[in-house]
Image 1: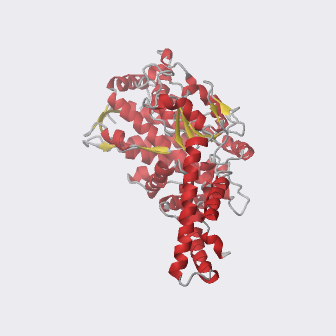
Image 2: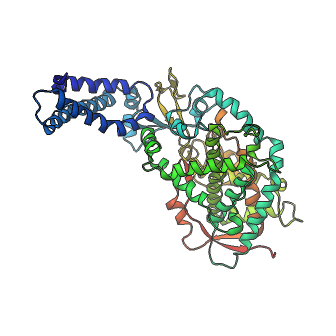
Image 3: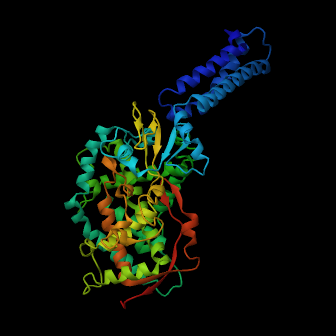
Length: 522
């Protein structure tokens, strides 16, 4: 047995075998075993070599024998991976067809962004990858935190599980539920506007922070019957800071699931994410203990008769926190930036909102539900600055898929569809980089050439369940901001938003400082 450790052929064979096994199936979330088990295994082999090999007279000699075998093993494994990826990988033929174009500054819809990962920026491919009849499924990235909090509605990879759970979520956002939420949206919007009025004499107001306070207070109230009180206090709750810190690792490692798996199981680099998971679980437990006077989202999800909270609801709680607040925060902040940049567009929107129920000083949710130009302004912010810039990932089925341009994508290939790129594509939108609310109204519909390219809330059966509430929320906020204030950049002309916004799966926006000039006397 001891002779095996001295055999370089055996070590090399084990390296090849490891690559073969690792290349079959999903091992991404077992990588942590290498971190903890690798050193232990090495130490055990050194001890075994010292005891079992008569040619070894000291631990240093045993260490040298095992280290040599390990070097051959790892060298063979690395060489096998490199050779396979360069010459035999299933995406090799895809890459070959693109190589001449890729060299011309990625002038192509398809770019290989990882060993088995492609970025596909094609509106024509959206129905095939995201559509209701798509055979693609969610990939291994989604299951990274199953062992901690279960699978949320958004992260479950089981189609039947999603279908069943989506029914409860749909009830939480159906027409009756949305009507029940309207009074709360109106209340929070009034507080938001009143708080901003208190700051009109200041030379600079950090509007991005106030929008964040509003978005989180609305989410807490409608989601959990919980008041964070950020608008009243004018201070950031720990929740906002934790949301942004928890999403930061995804900005760097979101495309390397095995690293995320190691981080979540060792807590190295993921302390904020784990703390955020714990906080959202605690908030859900507090919600379970009360009987709300007004129905909220979790009224439709929690079984009030059950003693324990199902594990997957913990993941749903984190989903509610992020999707119910941070995305609205980003979209509204960027919309204010666009309106400050394009003062003519702001003036036009002010005029249009002034004409909505002119006898009222405050516009409630029902007053702004049918205003095409207002929706157009929001849609332009969603188009130019989508809240999930890189889109969501899918994995191709066993038979692979063939894109509309004839490109065949093999099985088990991870596909990302970069929404930020697709929604700025001149093939789908005339003057694609121009902020033009009119393209979404009957004034200039020809500026939208392919509506399939507009997917800020994703598409197909996995589309955003809360999109109608999000639009209600944004309409009432923007309409009342336009009714009450003229808004201009303060200081840096909004440069921080442009330079410091980050794609951390959701869009983490930089600070936006503005000058508020009252349009009406309060």
